[in-house]
Amino acid sequence: MIELAALSLAAIDAVAPAPGPQLINRDPAPTEGDVPRGATIALELTVPSGDTLDAWSVRVWVAGVLAYDGSAAAPIAPGYAGAGSGAVAGALSLRLKLVPAAALPSTASMSVRVVASSGRGAARIDETYAFTVEDVSPPAVVAALSTGPRGVRVVFDKVVALSAAASFDLAPSSAPAVRGTVVASVAEDANVDLTLTSPLSPGVSYVVTVTGVADLRGHDVGAAGVQATLTAFAPPRPAGRRFDLLSMLPKMNRRADTSGDLAAFVACFQEVIDWLLADLDALPDLIDLERAPEWMLDLILQDLGNPFAFELTELQKRRLASILVGIYRLKGTAPGIRSAIRFFVGLDDVAITPLTATTLVLGESELGVDWELGPSARFARYAFEVTTPRVLTDTERSAVRALVDYMRPGHTHFVALNEPVVALVFDGWEIGTSELGATSVLN
Image (cartoon, rainbow, N blue to C red):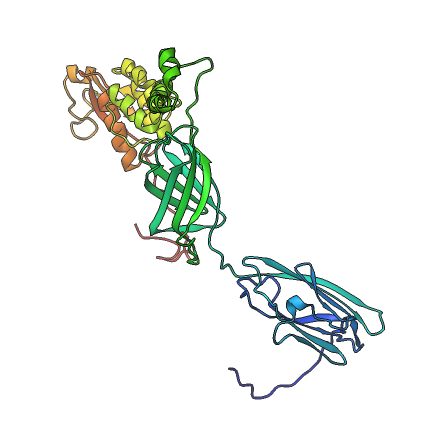
């Protein structure tokens, strides 16, 4: 609260009233959300210009249905004539309350269109606004689909969350077929991804029954649950392949199978054979560096004897598996050292130079001043230095040293890792202008 000692008006800028009816005091307000399902729709029409309001011309549509007609004997439609509804007309305004006889539909976007004219008919209003009803409906299953041999995705119509009581039952619609057993479930937005202990029977129709799943407002699907139908994943089969166990049996046995028990028994083995054939068909993808899964890439690198212990992304593992043999061939050479550093650290233009020492000039050089006592000639002959094009981080520096130590020939000596020297730049100091500690620092 602010208390003013005095208030005086120096000037008033008056705004001319708009001609014709105006729509005010709307409840629920335009674009309002989470409106209760039993909410009353209230609005008021007024004519601020001083003209009268033609109550006979007022019409209101709610969700496309005529809810109020000022020209009718019973202006309020039965669907909005609940207890408390009515219209209070004045000289310049009309207050209207519409009480729905039934609860508004959950999550519905309710549009309200208002049409009215002034008493002289000179101005007219035709305005539409909308509000959103609260969400009280439980989640419903939109679809269920098989994402792989051991994967199923259940799609809901809204974002859901899993509780400890969440359950997913996958029952086959025909026999012989295995029943799906869920070992893990993960909810993400409106999708729930299921992981199964064993593959579903290929091509068989399954009924998924979901219980214990609720939306973010806590509305549960209920004890009865919700259901959806899916067709289990079937592995691709090469064209022309025919591996049918039943047709391999003698004709006399097939003719004697009048009950169909033999065909059902053989179908159980046929499913296992189909999965084994699918695994054999997928074997080339496992050893293909471009299509192999990440766990297989780790095994491939292990089989190749990967000597590098760096953390690699999946793409880097694919690249390393493709060039590791080439790195072995370049081991012990300067191009091999540069290639390894380029791959793991991303440095180009790394220079590898023989060991350089200060030159001794007789009669001029002084030991410990401009000349140092160096190693033996044999050591210097096999010693080298590595020079990088930029300053390295601690992680990069450790990686470069490890790579050089591994890639260098065994009889050579890695002496130094040289990095560019960053020159210190000092700001100039101007007498009468610079301030110590502000624009200059005492060194």
